[in-house]
Length: 525
Image (cartoon, rainbow, N blue to C red):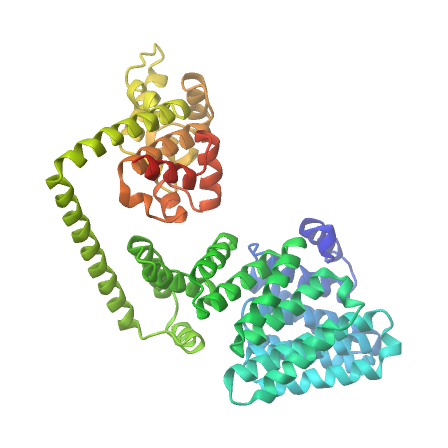
């Protein structure tokens, strides 16, 4: 199950092994397949594997020669349950695995399972048990250092890091007990001084990240940011996206607490861009909350409202228990206060709009200045129209789709269908794709793709992107309010899920980024 050979190869070999006549190998293969599919979020028949493995386990003799295999099976079952957030069943399996490791007197397996049990106790919030198991593991490591050989260093790193994390969590629960955080820092700094580990970028990055987290809890934000910046550099080097996401969130939080809102915003937005999955986690939800506060502080009301509403939408999807844990962990206000915040922001929006109206009225009174500004705006508008005409031909498509007269009746029906899609802006929907477009028109994907290629002289994707970019470019040109939105918000209006892909496509079709485009419009208007 080596990650280097890939999930498909691993599953292939385990499937072959499951056909073995040896009941131990067969059971191990079933447990491995279930774990691998769970880890990779692939469909898995839980009841089938559960029943098959349980019945097979009963047929494995509990002899000394089978202890190692039974250990491997139970640790896989524990890992699978942990992935499914079934913490108690995972602990039960780990304890059985520990029993087999002890009976076989396998030092390496004993150390491994003790570390897993310590992590499970952390998840169960039984920190004293976790700490005890961690200390047992560390003592055993030192005792069996010679036996472990080259594996000693890696296990030592994991155990020290885990102990530091346990002490950090204990301090989070009792910030008056400074012995906890001092113990955490002792473990982290001990690892940092290890020259052998310092040659491993990922290991060093994890230590820097842990130190940054510890100093953040101590409210020593300068030290916290110093270590987090170092961790970000190394995580980027080794392409660890999950830790880049977490480190950017933590850096954003530290800068926010230091009232450095520009840097905080930069890190929070980086964290959002790194969020690849759709799963909700506390860092993601709180990032939305902090961004709404930052934009509100900067008087960017539309963006503040956007992130606050995004936060409330994500928050509403959480269970009652998760909401309570979230409030306790991040000291968030009561839910009713969120509604007050929206009311406050909407009131600010009203006052902002009123102020703009008064300003416009004042400008109207000053007629001579209005005339001058109007001429300058017309001149700038002309330049922007030229830019749009140069980089987009979707307007041409919209005006000519219904004018194309084709002898082939089926082709004509498809062209007419495309015209309706363009006219009703159906292409702005997030789920707009070749299949849905074909379904809406009443044809199949192959036929639709061929017609677009023949009459539009482009692929379906290029056709979609041209329509969207042409639409959003004109919207930005004519609507000052939209220009104040974040790139993510503008991307969603145009039908894109994330700002990164939107920026790349926008630049491809216009020659400049959305930010540069808005900057140019604001400057010339």
